[in-house]
Length: 88
Image 1 (cartoon, rainbow, N blue to C red):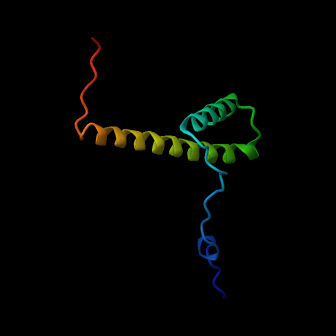
Image 2: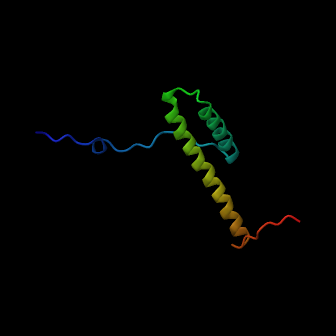
Image 3: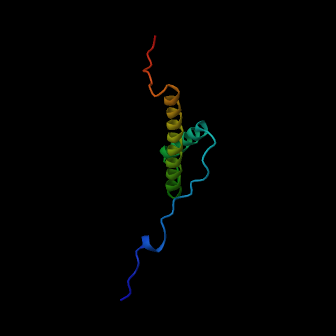
């Protein structure tokens, strides 16, 4: 009896194409907010839900990376010793 290969061995796992990332953090955040509103509305057709979720995950990762890069730059500028902010 011939052995049937599992689907994971017949083709490589492809990463979903979520399109180009935004040019800036602000643009990414705006697109992410619009996408979340669409998802929460419950009005998206079922076939668009997965793609929208994947795009949202890509945008979230993009925004997090941008914020982390800025935080790292601030740490360097403050010589690694961030001081707590206090309202005066």
